[in-house]
Image (tube, rainbow over all chains, first blue to last red; front, side, top):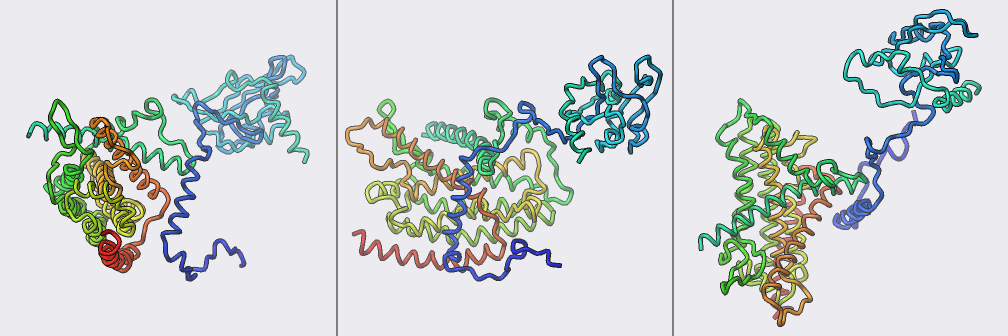
Length: 172
Length: 339
């Protein structure tokens, strides 16, 4: 049970030296410390003007990958919908003439339900659904928060960073 | 005569009220800068209209009166606080005197009060009532505790405040603030002649204005705001104003008593335009007040609050003996050093 370091176990009854007991010199020391910070660069980010650029590992709004030919990668297997803990994803499959044979007619993510766990991305066999860097998710109407294919499809080149990240992390 | 006084009162009130509202903004800026933040910068250019927004917000809030409160006293307490804070300004000499159209006007509202120091001491004693009554009349535990603490604290530190003042009075030989400044013009500032007295006065000023590290009457984490817990809307704003107005008056009093008031050091006044000199004096006085206010704020965002017993120990066991020793030392200094 030796969790205590010297930092969280201060000696409570340490005798103060005479210099410390005089008190005023220590106050002056404290004042000098704070006045230094008056001239330091500030940490604040002016948010709406200065946006935060998320790293590749960030789990933002889940989106569908759109290939160069404009079709989605998704084959509508429904695994994401199955694994989704809050049941936010709804997929309706249909047939297509493309090589993949299946595609989602309807793909909806309810952003009021989504908990950003990333299970959909993890379970997807086609790397078709990934977590994007989009974190500014404000909806003023209930129906606005249910995103259809029109809002979910993002060109592959915009998601390349996340796709590369997934490759690296899966092969570790 | 009355018209002159009225005009002066209006000018002083206008300047001080504006200054107070901007001090709130300044305090927020300084707290931000000392913590590596930026501070309010959204309302208007650089956040300069923030005070307007704050006042508007406070005006529009609901004025809540607790059911258990003593209505009349609950209403009276903030009035006492604010009026005491402003009354002290009546005798502060903001400058020497200004000549307009052949007439000489003294730059203070009540220029010829010859017991100015006594007036200050008397009014600061009355200031305790505002906070104590607010705490008592609110009918709330937190407020009552805050009020009790403040009465104990302010009475304890008034002694030290007085003892610090005594050394100034001894050195200047007068209770008149103008006379005190004159004696500093000729004999050097009191901060040099009575440094110990200055320290005592400064420390007890912090206690008298309820500022950190002696803001026990408010003590947000323990007392949920202390004496003004049950106040809202403009009544709360009055307490808020009073705190900052008190800071201005304390700074002004300290500038007058220890930093030579409107005296500009190292300035050869021979053959200078008297109007220019008066304006320079007012500017110097303002600068001194500002320096003290900055110090008040700087200390607030540096030093943690005292515990109640530490506060009492410091007041009675440390500062009071030092104050008495200081009187003896000043007497010796006056007799042997400054003939």
